[in-house]
Length: 214
Image (cartoon, rainbow, N blue to C red; front, side, top):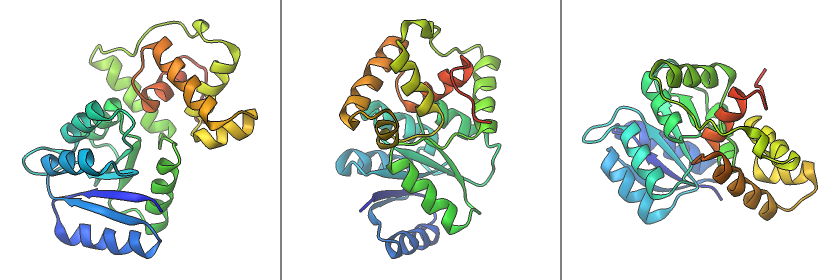
């Protein structure tokens, strides 16, 4: 059972999401009406997935996401937004959010996103990845520039599969290794490349030509 935290300042929207998710066998373990509540609930309950609205009172979804990921770098946050090109989405993804879902998406799209992220994937399509990389460049911010030549062949393969959206379980099956080995290798990759999370690793792999999303 996937445990989900909902963070949105509109009670009716949260109630609709809760009904949908619970009808599909998921469990809503908390509802936050603002960013500060989201941080507190996330720290207390450690949900499998957090659905985070961008615009909320007291503390917006981007800042809340940044704080949650500072506390728990493995937290799995999906941003909920009205607009595909919302600049705040870029900031959240840069901070480590696993991706985004539009508020007008159909139920199957949302459910699929939650299941994929709960399984370890990142929701990075080609346009989003390129936009985030462009945003890094425009602001003269950089991802770590350590050469991927420092990675051995197996690590490079794992990084490529991660960037292509495979979960730890899928990577393990494709490479005939255990999920624990995948987790350990990813930890080593993050350390070598000075990366903080899967989203940054996926962006790094795309930028360096290790993987593409075409």
